[in-house]
Image (tube, rainbow, N blue to C red; front, side):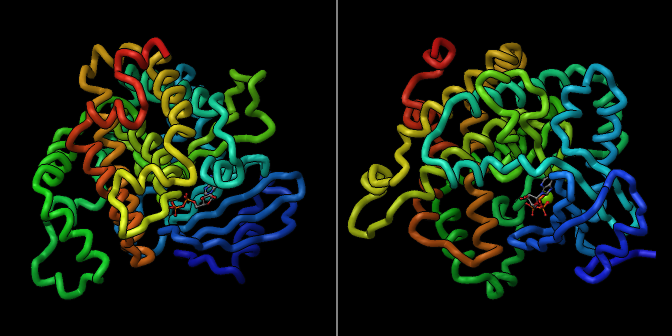
Length: 380
Ligand SMILES: Nc1ncnc2c1ncn2[C@@H]1O[C@H](COP(=O)(O)OP(=O)(O)OP(=O)(O)O)[C@@H](O)[C@H]1O
Ligand SMILES: [Mg+2]
C-alpha cells in the first residue's frame, strides 16, 4: 500500500519501521521551503538528525530516489570507490513503493549556503577541500567500468533541466499562461541569439565522462563544522553531498561550473540595482565584491586540477566548458526563481547578463571573474 506521509502519521511510520538505527526522537520540524519533495527533519537524542523525503505522487521523477539508492548501494559494495560512497549521507531506509527515503547524519553538518550566509569571511581551505573531493568523485568513477555498467543498466542519463524554455520547445499557445516574469525572461532570451546558440550547443554536446551529481548548488553541499578544520585536511567525512536524484554518467564540467556559479551568486545576490546606473557600475557596488570571492574560486579550481590533472588531456576544452556551465547554472537558478516565486527583477536581469557573458565569451569571462588567465591558474 502506498503511504502518504503527513505530520500526523510520520511517527507511526517511523515506529513501524522499527529501525534500530533511528534511536529516540526528540523533536520534529517540517520544512517545505522551495523543495520539489515533501521533507521533514527530526532531531534525535544522540545529536543526530533524520531527514525524511517523499516524492510527490505522480511526480515525473517518481523513480529518482530509487536511482540514488541504487548508486549508493553500488558504491558501498566497491572497495575502490568507498571514498566516493562516503560523500553520500547515510541512507537508513528506502521505501520504493511510497518513494520515501530516510537519511541520518550528525547535527554538526550545515550546508555551505547557510555557512556563507552566517559568515563574513571566505576562508580558502573550504573551497580547496571541496575542489579536491569533487575531483576525486570524477576521476575515480571515470575509470570504473563496473559503475559505468551499473549506471547504464539503470539508465542514468543526464537530462538537462528547463529544456522547454531554453530550447524553445514551449507550445506557442501556452504563452498566455506564462507569468509576466516568465515572459520577461523569454523576451530577453529570444532577443539574444548568441546566448540561445551557446545554450543549445552546450546542452547538445555535453560529455558523458564519469559519475556526476548534476545539482551541486551550495545548499546541496554539507560541511561538518567540527570535522572540517585546517589541521584535519584529510578527514573523509567532512564534506557530504546531498540530493543525488539527478546523478548520472555525465559531464564533470557541469558539476564544477555549478559550484563556481554558487560562489558567483553570493556576489551577484549582493548587488544593489539602481536603474540610473549601467551593469558594469552596478557590479562594482556589490556589498560582497567579487574580489572577496576570487581566492575561493581560484583555490577551488586549482585544487580540482591538481587532484585530477588528466582531465585537461582527456577533455581539452574542460575549462572553457566549466565557465559556460557556470553561466547555464545561473540561468537555471533564475528560471527556478521565476517558477517558484514569480520573481524576475533588476538583479536577475544583471545575473542573466553575467550568465550570457560566461556562456558566450568564456575565455574573457574567465579572466574577469578569476582575475587571472588560465595559464596563471596552475601556478597560483
Ligand atoms: N541527506 C540529507 N542530509 C542532511 N540534510 C538533508 C539531507 N537531505 C535533505 N536535507 C535537508 O533538506 C533540505 C531539502 O533537501 P533536498 O535539497 O534534498 O530537497 P529536494 O526536494 O530534493 O530539493 P530540490 O527541489 O532542489 O530537488 C536540504 O536543504 C537540507 O537542509
Ligand atoms: Mg532534489
